[in-house]
Image (cartoon, rainbow, N blue to C red; front, side, top):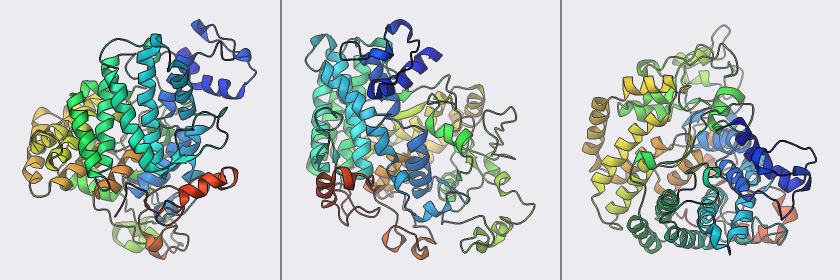
Length: 546
């Protein structure tokens, strides 16, 4: 991707929305940004911007993704700045961060809705229109899974609806599944007019069809606790319509020339390697990997002498990925301050050294690997073959689709390991060829298959949890749906006075932006009335029934 293309799709949506008055070089688009109007909006570029921003930016990934969901799911942890959020301390702007990506100057949902409405009645853009339908569903699914009821049918159309009504989550899900089924039927073959402006598949309709159906399967399985009839219907539809069938068909956004000085970087990597080096691998997560003799440890973790050095510095450290030296930090809501009531040193043993003079704990514990998940040029995985096979395994186990559950499971585990080949830097490829040999993959897969029959749902969803590392929104959603892994609430949360959940239980959702209660009060109150316990972290949304 050229620097010019990055510039175009990262800034244009803001120019369209807010009418900024600085001229710029927009290459062959021949657009004057001082006079954007209905006649000259480059709609394909709005679509590109939506494709990127719907995956998250440093604004929401840092807050919703790392400080909150990543720590709640115990993939990562912090004992410095962000330790109170391990005990569910509420910060309004952090909880509301993804909402702003959805509908503010980053405006992914607004942008994709704009192009959807523009192309709806134009047969020339039939493929483009149906691609937009799929992307809009993906955006809405992330939003509703984080918050519950959301503005949906009226959302993204500010000229028509200044104060959009909230659709119930059930209504949103019913419409999303319908939209995906209708869209995929119109995406069998051909190429979109936008061509290479499609950052995922360069306008290939068949790839979008597989995306739509694989997303349909994901959303169908989300209903497993609340509406099994609908879940079964759409899981079967998704399989019959045609799913992702290999890692080569993974839905992902590449960041081959991503840098941390703008939004071109993989967003989690930007946080881990540039913005905030205080996130460590959670002991809960690493214990799961180590207990299973998982060969991915070397590609997930690394230990650095000084992980605080930014990727922009010449002395940035990639660390030591040797699986035998990896250590996770406990995720109980601990502080590194020796004078704190919550000091991690109270656990005793090696932790008693943390916070003492001359002891650099950062050089002893694992951080996300800097060749893979902390590399700004790594891909962002959106919907993968591994996830799809694992969900099929559960659907088959439940009797909702044809096929053998164990075979789907085996395929999913193997695909999840082989997915690491798509981290393309020389360092990542070296780790892959060293640790994920065909023999190592076969040994691990066979060991997991041998354990499958004892508790299939647990086996499936723990593998899903591992594969979703650094897609913390999906991790959070699937944990609430499946109950796996069986996370233990942080040890200190119940006694922490600022804990925003009853009894220190792990949150079930994010709270709405505080200004919604003021500027969209009637609709906000109606949405809150559908939650189990009001607008709180521990309220359950519709599909997350007990």
